[in-house]
Image (cartoon, rainbow, N blue to C red; front, side, top):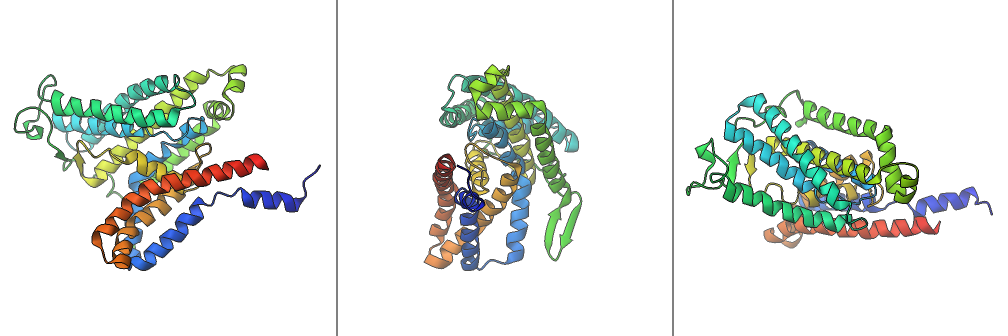
Amino acid sequence: MINSPIDNRQSTIRTINPTPFFFAVLSIVAFYYSGLNLQFVANEVIIRVVRNSLLVLALVIPVIAGMGLNFSIIIGAMCAQAGWIIMLDLKVPGIYGISGAVFSGVIISIICGYAIGTYLNRVKGREMIATIIIGILGAGIYEFIFLVGYGSFIRSHNSEMLLSRGVGIRDMVDLAPYRNIIDKLWLMDIHGIEFPLFMLFIAGIAAVVLKFMLSTRLGQQFRAVGIDRMSAELAGINTDNTRIKAIIISTVFACLGQIIFLQNIGMVNVYTAHMNSDIFSCAAILAGGATIREAKIRHVFIGIFLFHSLYIVTPQAGQNMFANAALGEYFRSFIAYGSIAMAILLNIRVERQKANT
């Protein structure tokens, strides 16, 4: 039986992911009740696009490769922080320090990505929960290295970073030698809204590189493995090796994203800066319309815009609506975790609709 054009259109309408529309409506309503200035919100959203674009882009390839949301990008964030700490410890100044942080962070993230990918090959079908556990384990190892190891079995070259007891790094480390060196390049001001063109250019280049990567033979292998792992193996693809490459690329992207994020912030909260980088990134890409089986580059930027627009205005909206400042802050946690739960439920509904058509 041949489906009519009307049936095809109805099927398409039923399978449209409603998540971005839901977030758009929530953002508009929250912005209205927040009373915030549009110029302020626009500036904040642009800053967050610059800060978070690479972190969210890091999620695309694992989804395409059939591994779901990679919560272990938090390991890439910790690799970036390790890179910054190494440069601060060695007192490498300016652009040389940024380059050194990138180089050392990427090297560590490649090693960690390989280890994570190898482990995920042993828990096929349960990658998402495994990456959450990996992130928790990695955070413990990271804290042990810099809270116990630095100053004891790891020699310190910068006494200003040490705790008063002589072992461990202080909670907060200033990135003053590197703050705003690259994100203040090529600024454009249009009616009070600042556009950091150089940093937006970097985000665009990262998206182009990812798009190109997906068009190569390796990208086709990612798609083949994600669609049907058994068929990919029969076609001669080393699926385990392909999955490891997907996680390595994801971890490296996360590392670079966290380096940009911290350079923009101007400081490293050594033991907590990486926290929620995975949660917020996953929430953002889901808000943009991605699913646990399908992700595209457009989902990344739509999601960052929608999620962070809502994230910015909800505290003030909550305060104005309920006359409770604390309640406005609770909205942030609700939006971050609730959006993932809601998006996954909506995504399951869409997947079921697709399966029935």
